[in-house]
Amino acid sequence: MKILFISPRYEGGIGGHAFRVAEKLREVGFDVKLMHVPHIPIKNLKNPSFAIFGIIKAIFDREKYDVVHAWNVPSAFVMKFVKAKKKVLSVHGIYSEQIDALHSTATSSMVSATESKVLKFADVLTTDSKSVQKTYKEKLGLDFVYLPAPLDVEKFNEIPYVKKVENQIAYVGRDSFEKGTDILRSIEPQIKGKIVYCINMPWHEAMKNLKTSSILVVPSRMESLPQSIKEAFFLKTPVIATSVGDIPEVIKNNETGILVPSNDPQSLLEAINSLLENKEKASNIAEHAHDFIIKNFTWEKLISKYIDFYKNLG
Image 1 (cartoon, rainbow, N blue to C red):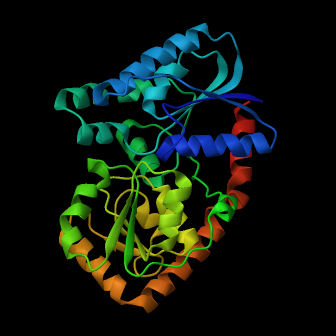
Image 2: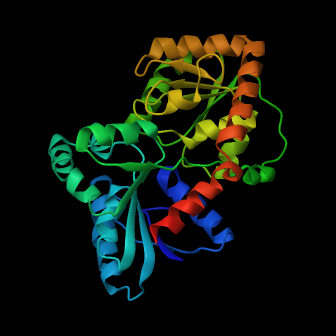
Image 3: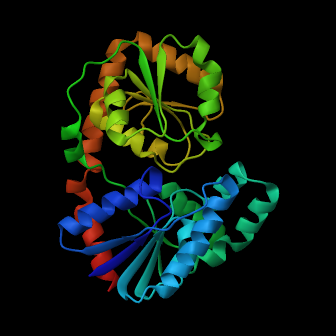
């Protein structure tokens, strides 16, 4: 089966997931090509320039594919012009809500008006989030296939053995409004530890910092399900996160992690300082979280689901 993946980039959130899926599919015999498209690296021009340059590239691409798989809404505009038997679009999060939080009212209104139309460019829609699946069904009457994002545990063999650093707190992700980094920074002077911000950092370096940390903090205002939580679970670093998106699907409060309300700096501060002081609780949470991720979110558990998904498209 010949598959083309389209993403603005192949690192970070959904782009990193696309790259990992491509790697695994190749290992089991699929022919997967990644489309690389240039863009203008300016905030309000990134997605429009990616779409324009991608469409031009797709029009002149003479190859025909069994499946074209676009990752996130901007890629759908490119996908539309690719010659393929089946077209798949994956969305992590409610796209119009993300745009509303990050851009102007005019941009948000335009995206909301076209969101349903763009999603219908695809023959099949997928998401890694049950909450996204539910919201799009209620909001637009669209059906999404739930494909959870697996954790490639073999990659962690490359992370060297390191000891935990006393009272070190990690943040792993983008530095943006929806991720709540401003909330974390606002309470930083009152935290009884040191925060390491793993922003725009190579994966291996970020994972080394995460492995040495006493806590991973996820202060997001909106999310689907951050891969960093699964990574922390595997590395036995306890997680404190806001109860948004699909985070409560994996964090059972006081069992596999600590949940706090979104946009509540005081609750976040109290949870961090309390867990830093309670080493036994932190250790128990880390063990339960590790067991949970091994049983539910590894490629060993989920690869057959991906193989069946692509084979059934034919």
